[in-house]
Length: 236
Image (cartoon, rainbow, N blue to C red; front, side, top):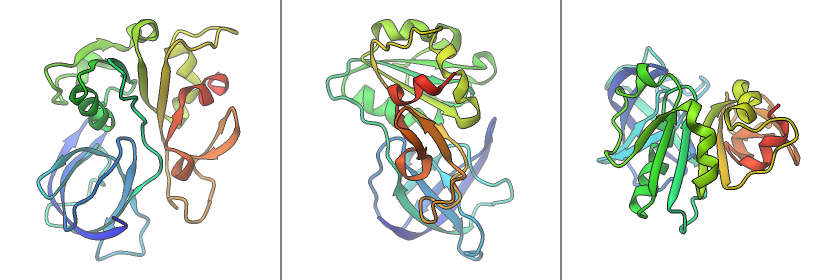
């Protein structure tokens, strides 16, 4: 799917912003971690909103917490995507660690569901655990732990997925318990880097640029999911 018409059916307030249910007029496939661009059909000159699906719904999708506060149910929308590179979950992975330092696991939900479908044990490490763990409905099979326990996941996880903002990326090494020159990772991992992506790779505007081991990259088209080993050496 490239572009299609859509409609905002339902909206709700979440700790990090508004989530909602969007009905789409064409079926679509999206890899966990990829994103879509959405804007009002009545105002196509405005900048689009970056939307990460948290799950599929009948004839559409449930969004993570990213919708504008002034949007209301019934809005006619224009939707484009999926865009960017998503997570690559190994089919052999049986122990998955996932972390949402801001306490919002909604962008990781498609990957959590994929892990459970392939029979993996899933542990989710949340920041602000007491405030937000009960807000987001999680499968009963998911073990929820505080973010402080995340370094332990490096010992047993086959794959580690992290959702973190670009402005917090410098704290990634500390969150993982990596200190000084000890940057060796015992497990595979990828990071969804959240940041503004206004041009979605069309104009190479550079707003979403981030430094990786291989040089500067754009989250909008080189990401927003990057290999953990590409980021850990530059995470501070």
